[in-house]
Length: 227
Image 1 (spheres, rainbow, N blue to C red):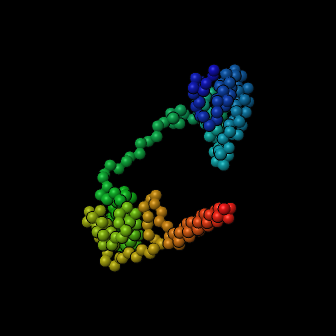
Image 2: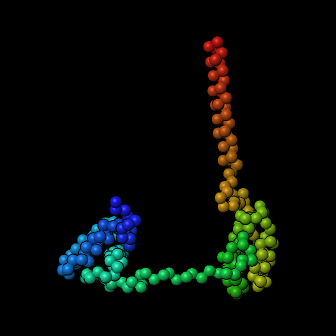
Image 3: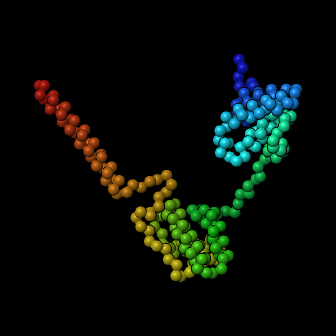
């Protein structure tokens, strides 16, 4: 039996094995003009198999790059685009540096720490005050998601001062608006139902129980009538 596990590895699986075989056959054609003619048919077939490329401005360029990749970069045809270099397409991605500094307050996240560092280096003006207030509001939201049901603005302002290393102190004229019932935050994965939806649920359960009870009474009355 001929299993896929024993066949040659697919270089670009999205095109399938037949396209790979077609390119191998084109490579084996001795006449260059014939190769150029046949490779155009292969490009048309690849365009049908990869229709999402049609909406991209460089779709045809990508198809020709895929042909060179599938052929192992050794197909001798007249390409309308520069032949890509194997090293440029097969190069490993650059390593993304990951911050190793520990978080002073994990429930706020690293973005808050970065925002505090940026704001603390800004000149004191109205724009800075607006950014402080917006950041404090977001910090309160993060605090309520993972900790208590309520938190005072003094606690948030103290955390800002602590996380900034004493460089950022919230001005006295800045205050956070009170949280309304609709703006309460929930932990991810948990959903708190409103009082209206809870009442609707209880009414559905009550109607179901009444329906089951009435069905049971009908059965009892039917048995008594038979007797």
